[in-house]
Length: 245
Ligand code: ADP
Ligand code: MG
Image (tube, rainbow, N blue to C red; front, side, top):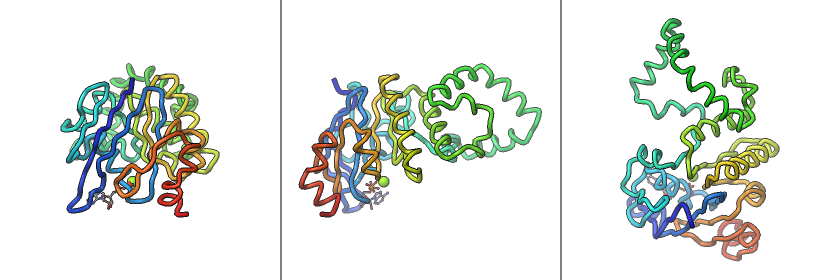
């Protein structure tokens, strides 16, 4: 049975239908790629699933629970995770909490207290880092890590919530081909090991064809094709709208 059911989902901005009645499903253990040209409605779709945008029409259910109308925090608790860039990690804190964190990190005594308080989660954190191949670098500052390694840490952070569904908006943007493959291979491994599902957007067709189990293609808010990578590659509508030929 499918984990995620999206039915007739829609969202308009002013007069523009950014997402125009799309339907799809996603099963446990599946990596589903959402592709389409710029402005196709990919990010809008993501943001309706994670609750940052409220759908105008349609339904999104996770394990049978309706997500439309729920707050992002509730949806996160129900098991929809997303990767955040390390730079955005503190974006879930409030304005004053962010400044408090900064003050805390500059107060040696308080910082030592915080470190002790956080000790009991250290083993859990190390176990997560182990799963993404970053345990050996656990005590290095994030700022000195290679870009591909930062992405692995971002994955470990997303796993902390033990998501059923992980949303990744352009996870390999800015990466060299070798790093891309290594991140996607890791993602695929996590999907298998944890019985998770992943919905991701991706510009590199090489990555999509190599790692997606299935893909859906959006153009101007509409779902124009759906299938396995090999079925999509030769789809005439996709050739026309997406590859521009
Ligand atoms: P994609 O991620 O596929 O590039 P988006 O979902 O970001 O596409 O955008 C789909 C359409 O909705 C575009 O025409 C875009 O201009 C419009 N759009 C997206 N977000 C907003 C917004 N907050 N306000 C107005 N228009 C928006
Ligand atoms: Mg986008």
